[in-house]
Amino acid sequence: MPKGLYKYVWPFIRLLEPEQAHSLALYALKSRLVPVPTPYNPPELGVYLWGMTFPNPIGLAAGFDKNAEVFEQMLDQGFGFVEVGSLTPRPQAGNPRPRLFRLEEDRAVINQMGFNNQGHYAAASRLALRGEASGIVGVNLGKNKDTTDAAADYEIGAVAFSPLADFLVINISSPNTPGLRTLQGPAPLRELLARTLGARDSVSVESGYTPVLLKIAPDLTDEDKSDIAEVALDSGIDGLIISNTTIERPETLKNARRAETGGLSGRPLFEMSTRVLSEMYLATNGKIPLIGVGGIEDGKGAYEKIIQGASLVELYSALVYEGPGLVDTIKRELVDCLRGDGFDSIVDAVGAQHK
Ligand SMILES: Cc1cc2nc3c(=O)[nH]c(=O)nc-3n(C[C@H](O)[C@H](O)[C@H](O)COP(=O)(O)O)c2cc1C
Image 1 (cartoon, helix red, strand yellow):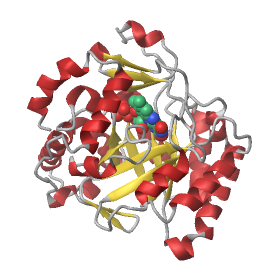
Image 2 (cartoon, rainbow, N blue to C red):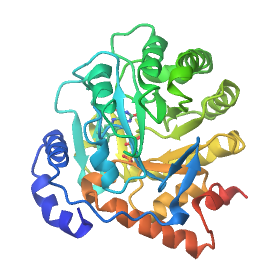
Image 3 (cartoon, rainbow, N blue to C red):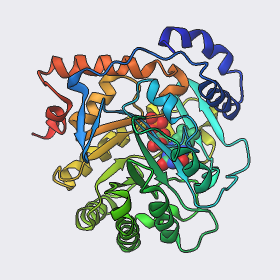
């Protein structure tokens, strides 16, 4: 849908309760009611990583397509890749509603969803039907709220989705599952990564090699960040996704909904998540590919994450306010940013701020 057209749709969407609006968006996408743009993937936007060629570096972040229902439609909207999930082994309802809030004047969202999803089986059944040429799809793994051995849920996920996904994401950074983020501590993290990678390896003969990435929170101390960098480098994981939503509430927030608990995303997360991205690029000596997420709403924002160290980027919240036409706009603006600084490709620009 062109950005211009969404301007006329938005006044109606904003009247709907946010979760209803999301369901309506999924329905419209599934029914193919959303116009599909002409593909725009100039060669300078291509990224070769983990043995795959991403047609462009702009991905859909986890949480939009939790159950792998519209990944093909979102690829058709121009995303270079889509991350589905978070998925837990068993279906779960998540937290009571309302649990999703728009902070319109802040261009932000607060969510306290709590991994509502249909579980591995439903999503795997859909992914199993996707065609060879459907584009790059990652699967984001979470844990059920009542699971005590958290690592077991990620092992199950790695075995279930290695054959179906182009990459896997270990999500231990959502703020809405009690105790989840404590898995980011060095000892539990070491064990979690070893067990998940072991599970991935146990099926790699049949599945081929599936890269595993770790998604981290933006709310980490300097010690946390240096511990995570060390464990990430030792463990052999393939990448880091930086970052999930924040539990911070910046002073600048205007909307009264700022008092809701949960994870804040969108514009107020941009600076914070980009700072953590930059720090993690330096802490890992640029040795692990990074995906930058948090508050991207234009090509300049995507470019900033890339020069701070991101090989790819993702977004979600800005789609709420701008519609799917934003993807095409961001790609065009990103090409202008690259050319403006004399870069021939994304790869040349990655981490340029630190060189
Ligand atoms: C409604 C909503 C649901 C989300 N659900 C998930 C999720 O299930 N798993 C996950 O790893 N991240 C989830 N996220 C976080 C996003 O993937 C992303 O990391 C974060 O929103 C920052 O990007 P943004 O500012 O572009 O939205 C969710 C975000 C929102 C707004």
